Image (cartoon, rainbow, N blue to C red; front, side, top):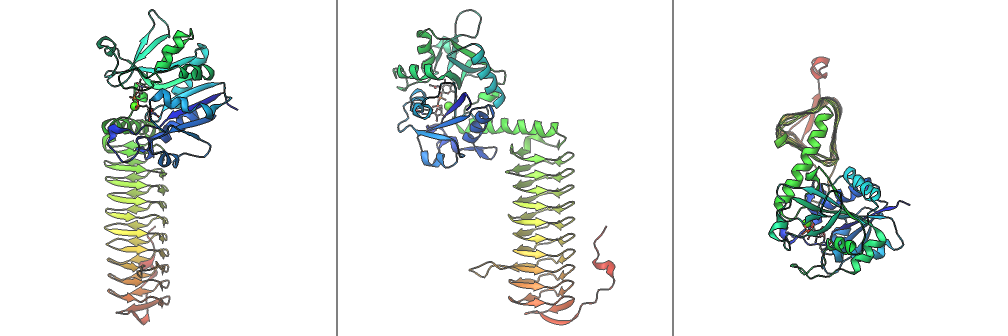
Length: 464
Ligand code: UD1
Ligand code: CA
């Protein structure tokens, strides 16, 4: 059992966001901000994690991973009161307690580890994580003891601070490390005689000082890490910091980014070496790109895995897998469940949904393939439509290897076009039909008129 626990305060509504969504569920990097705090706490070694819920508790609870315990702060009477409600969840625990704010998503495990190490080295009862900010407005100011050293007297909240105190630039991050038994004792003694009429967690420091305990500060140089999200502007700033970190990491790992300012990459995305990201690229979710890809301009790629040398420009690709050398775009939409084999070309207003596309296939122009399986080297003519939905159910379409689908063909599912078969321009293949391999079918509805004569093997063979 680890001797480090974490309590994350997440009961507040976040009135300043003016939102129907509780504050800690607002997203950045594609995930709710609370999730980033939980990840940092876990990575810092917090064996037990307790989240204080309150406003919209059930919504927040729904995103918590297994193993995280929760307590309910029915009325939000302040951060000190919030922490007090967590006590039963840590009954019998007597190690160090990290206290974190659910609305400060940029905190890193490395900084939390240093906080805990400092706390233990100083044998403090409380250690507050601080930073110096050029604009400290809105944060609690840290009042240190006279003289050198890490010792802190108390914290003055923005609303309660004197003008002199407000001029201090060292602020409370809202993250602390406490020695458990002294924390619970001090929390008993809080009052709410302040401008907000709340039980301030910050007052615990003064209570501990009065009891003769050691109260310290650990100041981080990484000021961006402590950014608390109270407004939509803060949310945008925090998201930008998270993105900058990710950009720096992928560049360090061998990825070219043409225009960092217009490139957005979620933290969990992986990118291979020598991949280039062109302006206006957004990579999100569990996307993993291979080496030597060229993505963008204007590419929105979500939950997608690519092999090497894939190119995607001016397109939306979701929940898909793309093989080597695949070219997507301009203006294609690949929807979830699409599997594209090597050397496929898809572009110019093609939409592909839940389909398997074989090696070397070309879907060049204004086509829709849904619930389709297309064999290797088939050619999908301009304007081909799989009519996969009969108003009640979706049905599959099969197109065999080297088949040639004429322009404006409509394939009404379920139907099959056999290997090497050809449909004439404007053919309508009726539901339940099977066009035999190597035949030519034309008309409405499509009828077989002859065997297909392929002039030479060359014409249907894939380019090397
Ligand atoms: C708090 C600190 C301030 C610090 C700042 C850092 C206090 C009194 N002030 O101010 O010194 O500089 O964080 O960002 O602690 N919460 C509850 N229950 C409540 C009230 C709040 O769970 O009754 C949660 C909120 O959901 C939030 C966190 O505690 O995640 C901080 O609360 P917030 O009201 O945002 O405090 P700040 O005014 O930012
Ligand atoms: Ca806050």
